[in-house]
Image (cartoon, rainbow, N blue to C red; front, top):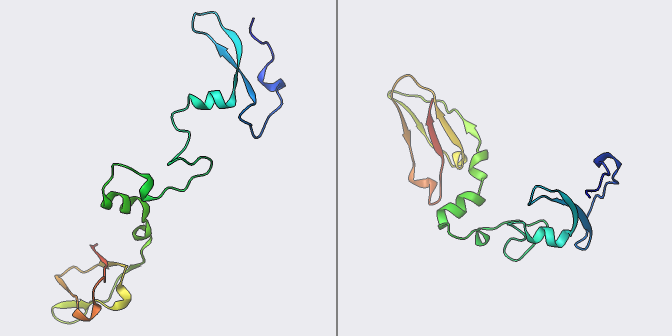
Length: 136
């Protein structure tokens, strides 16, 4: 016969050990019966028990994610581009123009001009300079 103790009467256990036992209702034939199962046996039925052979709190790196190319693993672990500074430069001259500065590196440059505007990328910025240009 199934256990009649209701949920509210049970004492809460904040952390479980592998050898702790849980009540479980087995109803494969339409006749429910209360049985017991250990935490470790229950977890053995869970699809994910560890990541790269580690368990508990796991920090993933791109070596833990198989099947993805270099660009995908880089994009999934590098979120710095999502937090770029947005700047709206002042365009001047005729035609309107703006010359990128070293301080624009890594920023989002917002162009808010109604006429054609030109952006100059000086050679002095060097290798690795990057920014995103957005037309508003």
